[in-house]
Amino acid sequence: MDCTLEKNRANCPCTYDCDKKGACCQCVAYHRGKNQLPACFFPPEAEKTFDRSYAHFARLVAEGTA
Ligand code: SF4
Image (cartoon, rainbow, N blue to C red; front, side, top):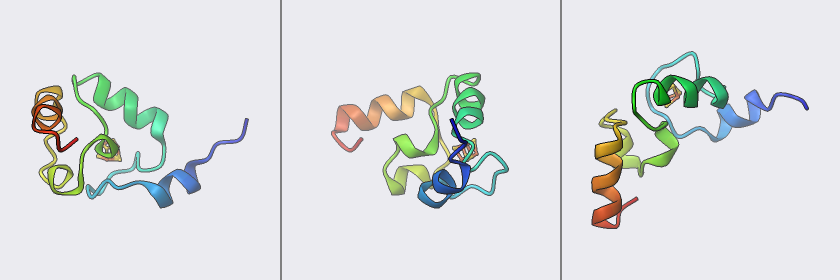
């Protein structure tokens, strides 16, 4: 299986300057280790806050915005 890093990078909505952009396996592992979710789980305005916590995501789900 070929790595789809370039395709992933082109579709990544993350606005943070990060060397894991497009390397989704590294991105998920990094945020999982911090009890967080990757940028692509959040709607654009919420993503820009860089608050990737489970609690933030749960609030957005409860509000119906994620
Ligand atoms: S979600 Fe996190 S790890 Fe993934 S590209 Fe953005 S800042 Fe980097």
